[in-house]
Image (cartoon, rainbow, N blue to C red):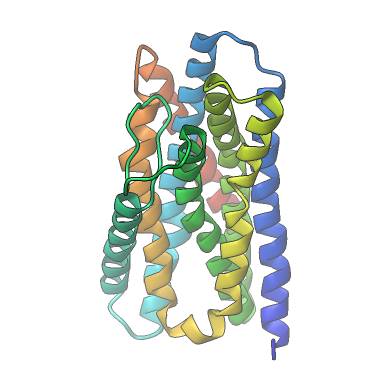
Length: 273
């Protein structure tokens, strides 16, 4: 039977992760109004990727690693051990997914992962869906922590959870466009590209809610899980987002996008946390 605190966390996670998915959908809608100029589309794509990278870097530090260290110390543990250990496990998990799951990054010709008969457009959506999983987990974990922690500390975690949801939502807007626009360039219709971009974000509420449902069993391991999500997100940033944001002739706009995303997420976390 689900207790009251879990129900509350589910409601919070549903609201937070629902917002992130809504922003992915809104970003995907850009393709419905975008022009046909491929160079302009690539420039926008680089800016969006850089912004998403900046948000994820800041969120990994302020919203995930710092709380992981603090909670570990509250449990009488050495703070850096679960932070470092969970971080490396998150990286290893994403490496395994990256190696096994068939996917294709925008502006690349050859897919990664195991050989597959999937269409090129399906592989493009798979690449984005891959790193939406740790984002949904991150939001769900913080809401679960907020529901399990009483007093001022619980309020602090709740503020951090909403800050993270807002930050990920903001970066999901360009991320939605960053998947729908390349799909349009691949020849997919506007409506289908929009639908595929929107559905790529549905894993966030799914995994966010799942994390909350099992939170009572995983509570002792929460510092490890928070840093696990951080490691997974940083892997995505380093392996995919930043390199793709600097392809071609518009590398400077990608860099500015990273800086803008980092600053906005940092301000959100400090202001709301």
